[in-house]
Length: 295
Ligand SMILES: Nc1nc2c(ncn2[C@@H]2O[C@H](COP(=O)(O)OP(=O)(O)O)[C@@H](O)[C@H]2O)c(=O)[nH]1
Ligand SMILES: [Mg+2]
Ligand SMILES: [Zn+2]
Image (tube, rainbow, N blue to C red; front, side, top):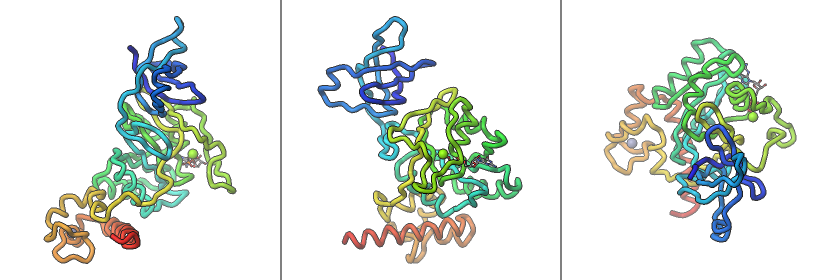
């Protein structure tokens, strides 16, 4: 039985991407009765109901690995976090906050440093190196000049990704540069709502050749740290993981505790001070929430 990925769901129609085609499927009555919901991103098996192969019926839904709430997409593998070198000025505190939120969702991470055409090579390399050294996969791009697109395409291949990052950094422009046929709107942020004019409620998936899928709606716009425990936060900073093995106390939060491996690594320059200070800021925010909830 053929297998495919649901890329769009709309009033009882499920559009299943299979090879180079998209099959318009309904749900087998048995699945409807079991009240199985099908999400964009789900892997399904289906049978064709017409000789041209345009229509079909979904017979089974494969177990979901993950389920993202915003946008509502199943089986997301990766987040591509886009920031701009300029226009808007990079906000590394916001970046670190997004990085932590994404890592808490156990997704793979790619940092895409876009608009490198607007700054010197030195400036772009400097930011990229800071994050590479911290353990992140980092790609420098210019959607405008079409630089770095081969590497970005490769990073998307074989995965289902969600783009994240502040408004105006070039998320839509990057996807247009990869697949000009998409014609996503760029640069149009409505002053009233602060969102793009054509923000859809139903997420769907865009195919990025050869084997990549990307949700058409960016994720991680709501950056509360609700699900994150203060003791877990350190693990979400990849460059803390080795130094924290040298903390004297296994319960060390790397803040006020003596003989802390993380703080030593900050002193020797193995951990960047700005990353550590963002860590402390997030830690205090989480600790305050935990205190209010009385634990
Ligand atoms: N100079 C330059 N401008 C870019 C680049 N990528 C996007 N832009 C511009 O930045 C603005 C916002 O881009 P958009 O894709 O809408 O950002 P989004 O809000 O993240 O989707 C648009 O005016 C784009 O033309 C780039 O690599 N270089
Ligand atoms: Mg956009
Ligand atoms: Zn410590």
